[in-house]
Image 1 (tube, one colour):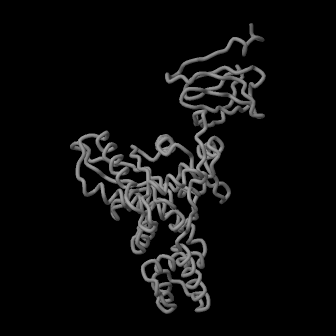
Image 2: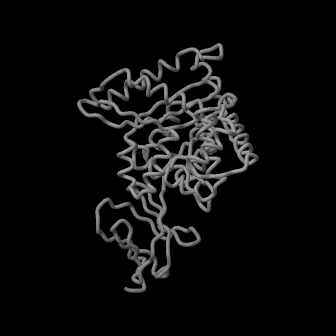
Image 3: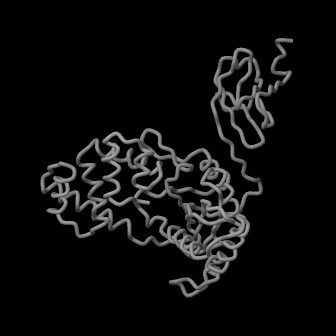
Length: 365
């Protein structure tokens, strides 16, 4: 979601006058995360006048596509106290108009070429309580086939649950999954984007390609953006639900009915088009996917490591070194610098417990 220009300017001014992000969020009626995002953004753009001018030109063109050189020059002088040459202003406007034009071009996809994913959030009455529901939405741009799944949050575990429900539902895996730049999927290192551990493991296990879309290019996943808007508008008209199970059942029934409708452009029903593109999708691997997170741990002199308050022994020769701990919900693997497994344990849900292997301490006996 992009905030209006006056709200962005208001965040910049209030932050400049020393107000906390929580106070600013309360004043503009947005979340602290939104204020934090735009505060960081403005600090980045404020480092360079041309960069800052490009950003504000982009915001102004989104509100008025017929922005003139004189209007933008007046805005720069009055609001930002910047004085640029007319040649520079003309270049900025032309470049941003071209960017605006490109991001609204329709993209065409072959049958089953790619699936798109996005999150949506909505406030609904569940029983007598107002709850925030997160909607995981998958869609195929060619057939307009959609899959909706309600979760409690937008965490790694929630995405994994929704994704596995999606591929089970369609009985296959899309060769390409187009996503936005969400935190659980993208991390930045030295100014470059790369996939997080979870999404790298998903690529390797399922043999698919995960493509983050370019920032400020909504047309790259416009199909799923429309799908999110459709379900949010529909759920608002329904009213209240007794339980979350009833909500899930209703979403499933409505989703099935939606996929039985005729396609808005092609002369066929959505479900028939999807059956056609199923032939191009990948098979689901027989081996189930297990997500392993990683953490670096220092080995103590007595040949043990401390992980999540518990103590685990490893071979004595690794004392004083750093090892990698890969862990899932049930298993812990401890690896050396070469990536070889040197110890394995069942994950203990209790706290402050000690786990030893006698063969790790043979020299002490």
